[in-house]
Length: 299
Image (cartoon, rainbow, N blue to C red; front, side, top):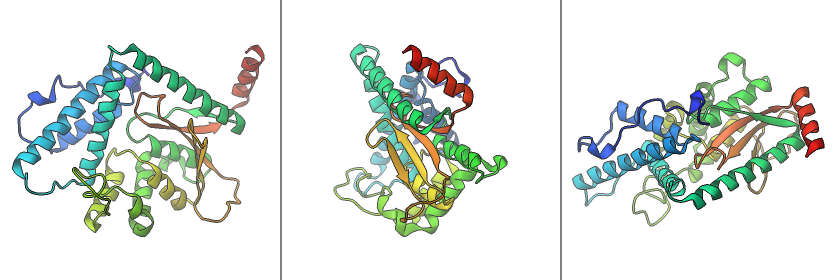
């Protein structure tokens, strides 16, 4: 995505987070910087990816060291935002390792996997008569992709078809149906906690924080949010991906769905670096269908 507006960093990446003051960074400015850096992990520009990933890792290590110095004998508490940032720091570490400029074999492997994924998704899309509609890789891609689909299906008016509306819908549905989602959400002291040895469930306060994070921040959405939105808007959401199965269906109820309305989005693991990304899938136009036929005739 280099060369396009959406791939340019929102702000300059600092040369080294370790050169900042030793106090833990917890203010709004730091959270805004984290959101920007996470968005930049989706860039196809490897330099932007590496710079963002390196700063994210330093920020996470800095935060963990500061907390450990103050309370080594106590269990480390993490709110939903901290857990989200920790997971993205691990993703950033993998990104740096796989995109190291001194390892051309790793770059070639990732490029090959990206092409294979793209071909697999396109094959499925061709069978369904849909094509990719690019969504901005800004941390809100899942919600923006579903918003685009809801407009196509006349479920949401265009004025409301944005990630803000859809994030709020996902958050509200999860919050009002805790028994359906708590078993599948990361816990502060369970498997996602630092030094955890067993699984656990969120406390009511942690659950509330999780829902607020989905609603008010750039936290990435996943399976729980897709299922919540399928139920909230009473429409199946089908996710086309390069893996197996090629189509993952999320239905609003247990009974077979009789309506012809289906929201379709694509999930990309490799196409945008290691940053996971969602796009919307729109019906093919007559022009694009003709182009496909011409290409097939000469291939």
